[in-house]
Length: 229
Image (cartoon, rainbow, N blue to C red; front, side):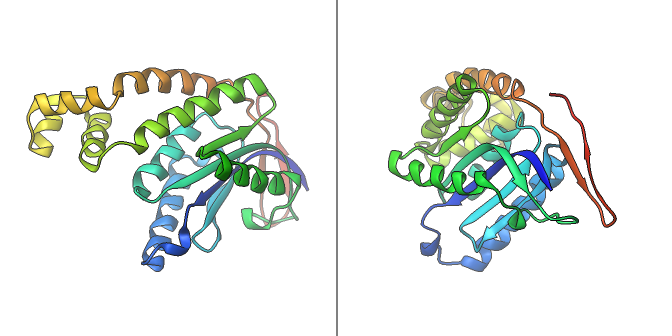
């Protein structure tokens, strides 16, 4: 059975150097479960580990929330670095097959090639969709944001994470037990205002991407339900 999807692939950098591999794998599995539950309507096939603790993958029908998904993985697994590839195209699966690790098609090999290219450039995100102009904008918005975030210190990241959650400097100061002035300084030094502006444009760009067909697989049959084009 052929179906269209956005294939998302995440590669954990230098996974062989992770000392507590079982703990990391458990954390990765829990994160995948959390994402699949929180963004269930976005996925055709659930996000899951496909190669030890090195790679995770999933198939999506829409990508308007992919920035939030990648941010969640980045934040929860920090300081472990991850690269991401997103590619739109045809996937193939057998009847009753729900596991992303059992799908096949040209975009699987293309995603691995794109991942290899990321290693050469030092970027952490690339994508290929049916709108190359939109793809280029999304690519550079994503990479700019995560490049800035990668340079945040542990304390700065903690302040900004709480500010994302509370959107109130005084409340953040009380929770972390620092001054409101320190919160303000951390936000200013992190280019947070500019990141928010770029995030807003990025989310709007992602919303413009095509919503693909939804594939429902059950024990009896394989059917396709049409979604907006």
